[in-house]
Length: 147
Ligand code: GDP
Ligand code: MG
Image (cartoon, rainbow, N blue to C red; front, top):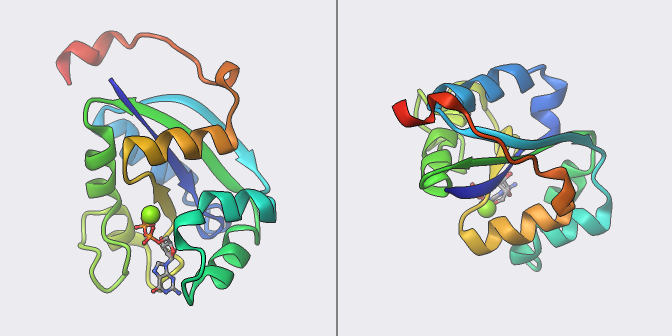
């Protein structure tokens, strides 16, 4: 079972899309193992987006992600990193296809509603930036054998 860090960004929280975004992840059969509403600090945001440091949009991105609460989550599932990013859709709202979360709900980059880790290494680092190990809940879902 793989795990990933998924985060409803401030635009998703403000627009009241938390429930619908979580529903899509549940519909896919992923398992939620941790969740909390967080006001991201500047330091935490810079750590989270460290691979983008120095890019022209970095400052705006940090301002955006710290502009209001986010819903930080850990989800589990086989191949969840690739599968969740497919469900999320492309980064640019002009390329995100209908049927994806971004394609259906986002209309301007960088307001693209949800973050998803892009590799197991990123997932480990991003999860550690938001959660302690004791915050992840291990449990079985009886439906797992059917997904
Ligand atoms: P993601 O993994 O699909 O979220 O995309 P990236 O890791 O490449 O970028 C992180 C976030 O920065 C994106 O989700 C956008 O919110 C924002 N972003 C990425 N590229 C751009 C850009 O060219 N311009 C602006 N304004 N924001 C961007
Ligand atoms: Mg990324």
